[in-house]
Length: 197
Image (cartoon, rainbow, N blue to C red; front, side):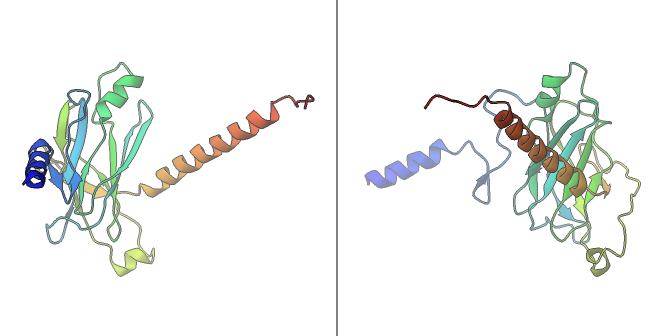
């Protein structure tokens, strides 16, 4: 009876957290209200159903130079970190969502760049993300991604157009590793040798 009561108390205590596939999803940060976050359920453009792959998302603010890569969960959900707070930490200017670049990639789907980012610059903003499955010609590299004009789909959402987000991510990772290697070499070269033993 005590075990049952303990389990019931645990369930009631964690009832405030919304769960998706056993993982915390859309949880508010513990530091108060969010400044600006993006979230979406990524759907297959042909079937209209959520994709069953983890989407990889990269959000870039060219003005402040902030690049935020993150991953969603297996049924195609994603929720960004607090983009607005990150931008306001390095810049005092208001957030310009027209400048934002949001790229989404998933295994088996064409990489897309969200062409319409809603103008809302505070709070949680839902995006409308639909990804085209790759065809055999796409996986062999025979065709290049084509940028399509995007138009707003519905209030609070955005339509998508193809883009390639893998190259900026790999360049960013390579630059980070290069800087780490250079700093390690500089630390060891600049040390005076110890003569006392």
